[in-house]
Length: 166
Image (cartoon, rainbow, N blue to C red; front, side):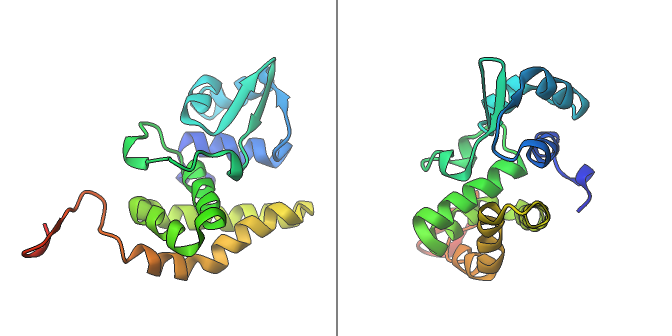
């Protein structure tokens, strides 16, 4: 996928990560980049992908994402957030936990996987082995996570005891 194929929040996060990884950068610089990507620092903070305060901005690491996240109740979800929630779920709950989450995100699964590949390549190129490992773990577990996702009903479908899925 080309960068433009990702949502605006994810485009911002990709550029910010390329420059700062998980480190802090100046709010003013983040504001200029956010405007260029048709988003806002405030919106990105509300979306739950970054922390902003004291004139500084930084992306959240996967372990900082809430474990009780429900994508059905999140009004602003970026591919970036989905990817990092899956990494968190894989680390905390294994393939079945990540699969349960992927079942909710199924329509965006290809974009999530492509972003993981892209970030793995970026981290490898920059010598960020620990970060590359997180993306690689998800990519190498992808088929098992997808299989685990198949055990859960598709979003919006309820199981009917008398006739399968409705």
